[in-house]
Length: 475
Ligand code: F0G
Image 1: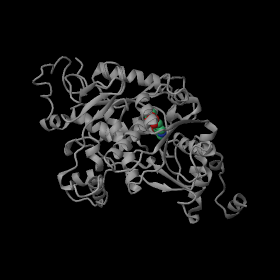
Image 2: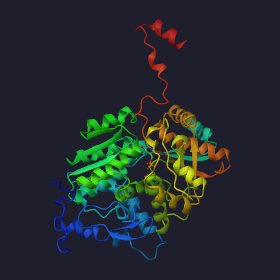
Image 3: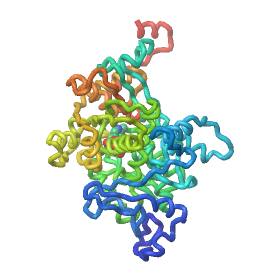
Image 4: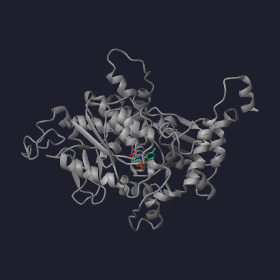
């Protein structure tokens, strides 16, 4: 008989009184403050229901986590300006030096670039948290004005973009090499809180690597569905090395996504795509961390690549919350950048979101080769609320921008370079002004895809180990 991911057999646990009797009281208490609201029809669900975890509303819409963040009592001071208590709390935690004592758990939480903001992420009991830790990624100043001429390599990026004040937040510096670790630490923590023994996702490669790593940390079964032939070698290698059951689908990401949702429903496996609203909560930390690195001064623009649209949704929600808590004084405008051959969100945007487009996707940036994005409605809200924009760039533009980022010595994977390609295009169009303050997100590391956009001929030269031979090559 199939065992569902809450550890119950189907049909068990239907009685109101002992719905959650298999869960620790501390988990039930923590999640009693959390609700899930449908992005389409606004119906509200409790985070804990009998039976299978819920990923969609009865109407089919995706869900958004709702809870009221509570500032710890020690930081409440009505004489201070709004937001000051939150800033003090997060700044103190960020200042904690990563020196491990014998009892590391609490320090690990403060040091994680996700759990440092835990009151705004998930009220997980400390002992359930599964963390590498993640986050604490660099924010590179690369604009013409905010990057001095002495770092002429990095400054090439600002010159290419045509911007005075540009920062790049490099999420490829996370433990498994992409921003997905931020969502996955929360997703796997949630799986643990629910007593799940198996987790699964469909992926273009980065989500699966993160899922495999975090599941392995706690000995959980991990199952990943990948579009065969469309995953960069390094990403596939990670899933295999971390011990995930890796299933390649003779289809594209959208096929794999449809399939994994059915598989998880039928077999009671906990689904960890960004359809899972708790993954989105973790990814919000990209926004909180970059705002903290900017001393809580919001930029004018936030630019990022867009595929399944989880990240646009998450960072948008983070900025909205930061604004509501008076951590920042204005909302940045969003620019989500899609590859020309995988741009359904752009096509919908161009029609004022009158229709929801989908397409057969094709692009050299395999991470964002997605034709029917799951978080469409969540991301649409972010674009509309922030007076944002969706832009589309060609594969040639993506690869040209990647070369600029690579040659600066920073490097990124192809999908991430859509950010710089998009910025350059929007500056050229006069949409982003040269003196505006812009943060671009680089979503993944250079290291997983050793082929796309990287000159292979340079490694083709093999010479004799003699000085003469070297002289000839370098002359
Ligand atoms: N950049 C990289 C490096 C990615 O891996 C992804 C998504 C995106 C951008 C797009 O982010 O989906 O939140 O809009 N990768 C997913 C995966 C689909 O399976 O690894 P999004």
